[in-house]
Amino acid sequence: MFTTCLVCHSAFDENDSLEHFPRGERVAFDPVKGRLWAICKGCKRWTLAPIEERWEALEELDKLVMDKARLLSQTDNIALLKAGKLEIVRIGRANLSEQAWWRYGRQLRERRKKHKQLTALAAGGVGAAVLFGPGIGLGWFGAWILWENAPRGVTNAARWLRFGSAAWRGERRCENCGFVFRSLPYNERGRVILQPGDSENGPMALTQPCPRCRKKASGGLVLTGREAEHAVRRVLAYHHFAGASESRIKSATRLIDEAGSADRLGRIVLGQGRRLGDLRRTGAIALEIAANESQEQRLLELELADLERHWLEEEELAEIIDGELTPLPVFESLRRKVIGGGG
Ligand SMILES: [Zn+2]
Ligand SMILES: [Zn+2]
Image 1 (cartoon, rainbow, N blue to C red):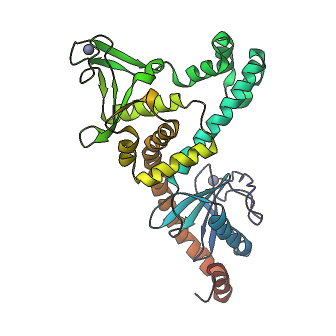
Image 2: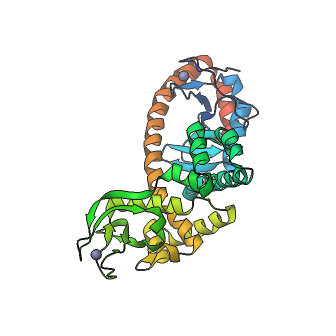
Image 3: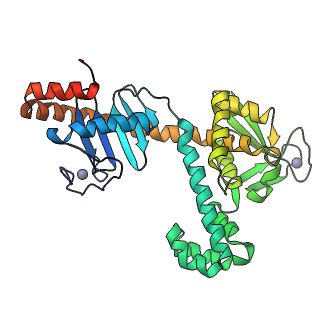
């Protein structure tokens, strides 16, 4: 069993997911050609597993992909999946439905876990937060801020640390009365009006009523396009700082599935426009997931393009190595074993 990257010699971390291939937190496999690689986190190069170590591992991987893995994203040539901590690159299009929502749903679940930890720390006294803060990823500075802000509550201080005090800063005038907006403070978020996007405004628009003229029909702080997208994501994440339960995330994602697209979800949940404070929780969670989905999708597409480039190089090498070292009949039987049947 090889344990280090053949290119840069970094050690592969152990994964708990594969009995027959316990090294590497990111692996790639081609079930048709019978290839198996461990991908180095350091140099990103792929190390081809010796052919005698592939058999069981390939079967195990195929089963893991079918039974437990979540499909993050795919191109025509490769699919990126995740099973527990293990990241799997499967060559060839996976015949699975993409569960896009799951990517962000996980963040909401983790947020809930962390929030519970913080609440427990608060109950245990702030001294505990200073002692154990670093254990939950707060750092000493964070723990100190919590200490300073103890009277206002540990969770509030943690929220401030994470988000600051405003979802948007800039300079914008009310169309009616000329009042100058310089920020959109989170504590006024209940009155913020979210509107579904259109061709002019982009995916979503956000309006904060004007505190001076208070006209409902026009004026106020109006954000559209990328600016709105960014502010909406921040406001919703702040609003859902405590995260969401598994069942809430499931209902929210069912809502997204039924809507079919982020735009239609916006119209269903928001109608012509609705105050954040008046939104039902499931609808608001669905909006947050959908608002982040497009952002995550863009990042994943970049990552997939990068992986695909590596795959083309490594496959070329693998073809040479396997072709030279492996007698064809052995390879054929391996291939049949993995893809099943006589193919
Ligand atoms: Zn390496
Ligand atoms: Zn005004």
